[in-house]
Length: 287
Image 1 (spheres, rainbow, N blue to C red):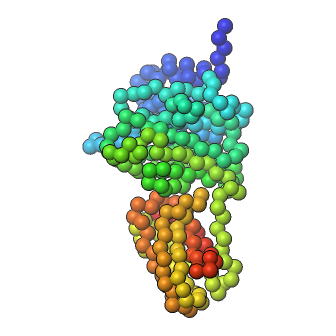
Image 2 (image 1 turned 180 degrees about the vertical axis):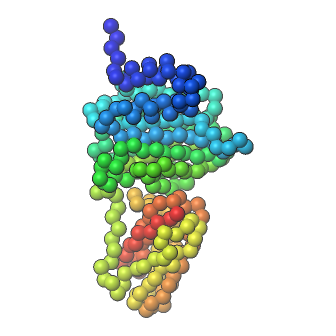
């Protein structure tokens, strides 16, 4: 006799209930159904990802992928994971062990982790990823969640408590879809830590902070020796996203940095390094 896990029974429930719930208006998508069922399960964390497309009729949802983190769950694939069936329109999956999954279950988060996303059936158009995280605040602020864009070489912070919306475009280049995105989960102890110069006479100050994308950041140099300075902007995971070199005539002055208009919103580290390799850092937020 075949046995079923509790999650397998959930899948069966969803299969038989989808038509009824959609008809009655209780749920608008399979993603809604999954969130409704999982909400009854205790001691779990969840990342739910919707893919939406900008169309003449508005912003329309095309697919969903969900990853649950549950104490005692199998780290491999089993009956608690759902294979992603391909549809004619745009597809979004969690890609793991060579399989496309619409719903994956992993053990509770106790170390750094990565969720590889895969997209196919995409058109050359503008899209949006919608992230909803559940129970990630149980870690008492010790976890950082980022979306890594391997096409644009950028990272964006994902909120642990509120919905995060990230726009992107698919173009003729195949790398603008497929396995472009990864969700990266980091414990703060493993993330780069700002190193502020404790010498107040030399500490850097930046303003405005927060700053808008494409805006101008003013860096206050106070009592610094003359020379060439390299100013580098990093993501919190250490990826360099922008760099410029300025000449300082000595003493105190204000240097300006024009931010890239395509920077993603989130927290960054601005590093200022002199010709001797001495560094100072300041944290800044791009809105």
